[in-house]
Image (cartoon, helix red, strand yellow):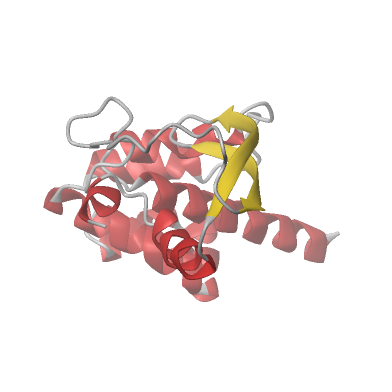
Length: 167
């Protein structure tokens, strides 16, 4: 658990519990799609042990090149707090879309963070091939990758709702 937490792979923790409860099974990988900060796999679980399976090998995440998520620095707390709050507070999202400068000041963001957030909040992004990159400028400032991506998604969805209401 500590290794999964170390790299921010908390998505695997519930699976570890479920797979332990299910008992003996093996997994077949059907496809894998890498993304900028993690990957998506399609697998099928089969009952029982795989007859020709090699013994499991230990894997250590420490200093591994695929340690995708680093804990954000305490200096980026105001930015991460704002992004987290925006995911749950519609009124905050609306204020961010109307007056990002006031919200940035309220959360104590640096001028550089506020300027970056202003650019990120200019929707729609023309990054249709790889929309996950829309959050990259925030991640470069120290935002947690998943938190930044989720915040960008809800802000963009909020803007679409506003545009639809005006139409």
